[in-house]
Image (cartoon, rainbow, N blue to C red; front, side):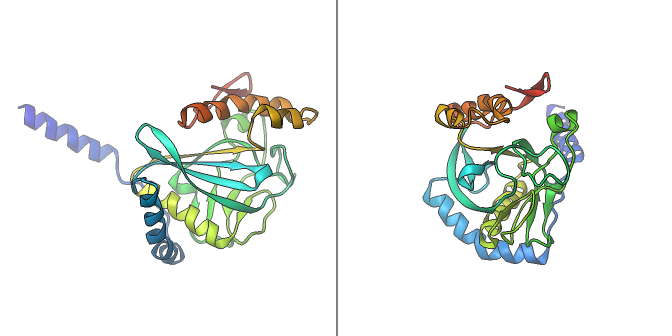
Length: 233
């Protein structure tokens, strides 16, 4: 009876958790065939496993995108990529057509992959997120993509997006349901906050800082909630 119940529970798991559909294309397949073996070797060289969850951070003032890979209960730094171009300087996007690139805490799901983008390969960052929607911010289709040119998105070189896109795809393929992408104006230490103390975005940046600090301390992606129309951790 116990064995029968176990089999029934397993069956229900498979019924209610179908394999997630991953958008794909001949272009994306060719890219994976080219870069995935190299990435596998690089992961192994750092003692990181292939089927682990990933976490992504962007720092605007450094033009830097970081990939972190789960190792045990924490995440380990894997690799960084140069952001070829973003528009609007520091400060987050608030409305369609403002030419700004967003800052905040975002979630990527498989449906946000675009393997047939006009900009080579693209990943929708998830702007506007829940907080931005509450605030009435407008605009959409903000991407991390290739071709090194953009307004409002984060443009990478094609070789850069090839690797980023492949790492995201493989994480989903291995069972990760959502990938966290956190976009900061800069590394949120006291030195930078002092440097930008007169910036009109300072209050918003201070609301982001606890999330940044949590990851710096624990190497576990922070969970951003919302309280009084601000991020809360």
